[in-house]
Length: 431
Ligand code: PLP
Image 1 (cartoon, rainbow, N blue to C red):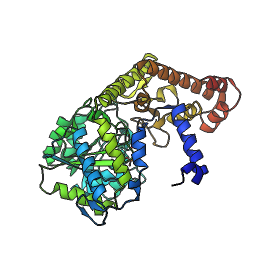
Image 2: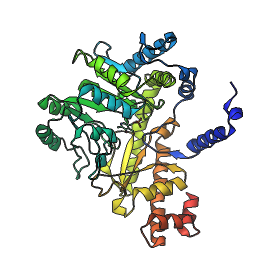
Image 3: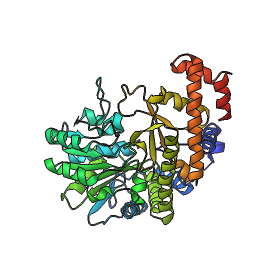
Image 4: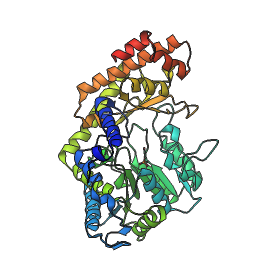
C-alpha cells in the first residue's frame, strides 16, 4: 500500500500535470466530463482486483458475494436513474465501453451480414453505427454487418426522416440505429418507431452523448419507443468510462438472455468491477435534483454559446442546439477544424475538429464540436458562456490573421506563424 507518489513518481507527475491541464484550461470536448471525486475513488478501489465472469448469483469464480451485491445495486440504480420499470426493462452494466456495448447489442439482435442503418459518420453518426469509407470498412460494425447510412438534410442540418423512410423501405434493415456523436438536435423516436415497424426492424438508440440529459428528462425519452438503448457512462452522465445496455423484457422472451450472453462470453471476459462501482456512484448522483439542475443548465449554456456565435454571423449546423453541443461550420470562413483545434490548444481551450455535413473529406473536417457539459460541471453559467463564446470568436479572428500572415493554407505554415513573433502570435498570447 505504498502511495503512487512514492511507488511511481513518474506516473504521479503525469497525473498531476493532467489534473492541472483539465482544471486550468477550458474543457469544451462534448464527449468528456469532469467526474466527481466519489466516482474516481470507486474507480480506483479494490474492486479492480476481482474476477467475476458471469452474472450476479451465477459466476465462474468464488468470492463474489460482495461483487454480486455491487452489480445488482448498479443495475437497480441504472433502472431508477432512467425512470424504468424493472418488469419491462432490464440492463446489463458490464460493457467496458460504448463501442463494446453497441457491438454486444448487434451480436444479440442479429446475425453476421445482416443489414443495419445508422446516421452517416460525416453527418454526426458514430463509427460503431456501420461506418465505412469508399476505400475501406473502418468499423467492425461494417466489417461484420451490411450498413446503409442515412443522412441529415444538408440545407437544414436536421435528419431527413422522409429520405430515411424511403431508403429503409428498400433496404429493410434488421436494426435501425439512432443516436449520434455530433448532432445538436433531439430525436423523433415516434417517427423512427413507425419507420422501424414497416419492416419489423429493431429500433436501437445509442444515447451515449445525451444520456445524462435523458436521465434528467430534459430530452425526449428513447425508452418510450426503442427496443434496446445503449450508452456510454462518461459523457453528459458524468461517470467513469464504461457502457450500459438496456433491453425491453416484454418484447421477446429471450432478449434478456441474448443480451447477457452477447456481453459475456461472446464479446467480453470478466467485468471491470471497479468501473461498475464507479458507474453505480454516478447513477446515484444522476437521480438527484442537483443533477437535473445541472442538465438544465447544460442546455441553457449551450444555447448561450450558440446564440453568441450566431450574433457574429457564424454558421452553426441547424443554427443552434437542443442539447449539450454545438457544431460550428468553419468552411464559410475558409478555415478548417484542425486549425481551430490547434490554435485553441495553444490557448488552453480544448475542443475537437469535427466533420460537418457536406465535407468532401473526413481527413480535413470543416468544423469543430463544442460541448458545454464539462464547464457546466465547474458551475459555470450563462455569463461565463458568453465569455467562452467571445474567446472562440477571438480565436477565429486570430486564425484568419495567422492564415493571412502565413500566405498559405497549409497547417504547418499556420502553426509556424502562431509560434512565431508576428501580430497573430501576439494576439494568441493574450487570449
Ligand atoms: N456511441 C456514441 C454515440 C459515441 O459518441 C461514442 C464515443 O464517442 C461511442 C459510442 C463509443 O464509446 P467508447 O469510446 O466508450 O467506446
